[in-house]
Length: 322
Ligand SMILES: [Ca+2]
Image 1: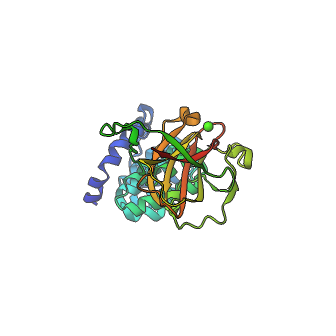
Image 2 (image 1 turned 180 degrees about the vertical axis):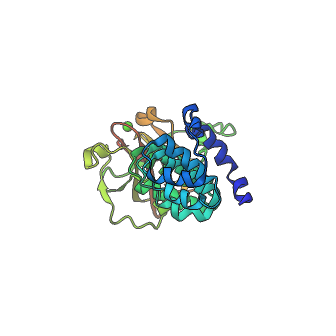
Image 3 (image 1 turned 120 degrees about the vertical axis):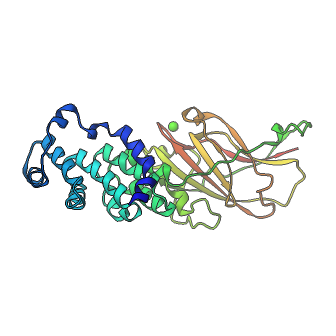
């Protein structure tokens, strides 16, 4: 238990910042419950929330009553008691708390969910953390919490994609020759409201997208996803001709509303992630090493839209630089 308390110190520091309410206002502090027997009666039968919280505090300090009080506190009608119970339960049980934590993912109170998200981040076993965050991302009744949890589920893709024109060692003039524009239709698409598609391997070359919807280049609002803000994944296969002489190959995106993360043939290429202002800005990603000449290539784009229209709404091309 001492180990666990130590391990959870960071959570405690965090929670002591976000939880001043439970330290008790001066009014609450003045209402203390003298002994455990009285506290039990108050906790189970009194309607005054201040008195009940005082009784709850008294009981969780009592070794004989702590465990049962915390367990029942996890389902208490008072959100302050639920929140504190969640914290105490996690502090006292560590990873074995996971099954109980999973039962709380549909709690309607934002502060309880903030606490649960904090606990998720602190779980030492990565796959436990992923499990809990995925459950929150899927099941929370609060939109913002679902979104936040989804973002936290191990999304670590980032790459500084250096274009040839920005390489100081390359001092020739480059001419961009559009090799070809990718099809305007026939993109496979899946909304990803839980924002956990990356944990399902949506970016993998061999991923089976045959059940995904078929979308055209254009906003997803115009194609059956009216008012959808969040993550959406696009996949398309395209054939490359046999190798042509060139200095570099780039993917040219005329506009994605509003952020994009890109994989080619299962390899992470780079991102266009400058926030809402990115919705109409063109961007280019070098794929000289990843493109497969004379073969079918698989392009995957994860799009995040936070407001208004969203999606790959302007053409995408493969460009050769000479
Ligand atoms: Ca938008």
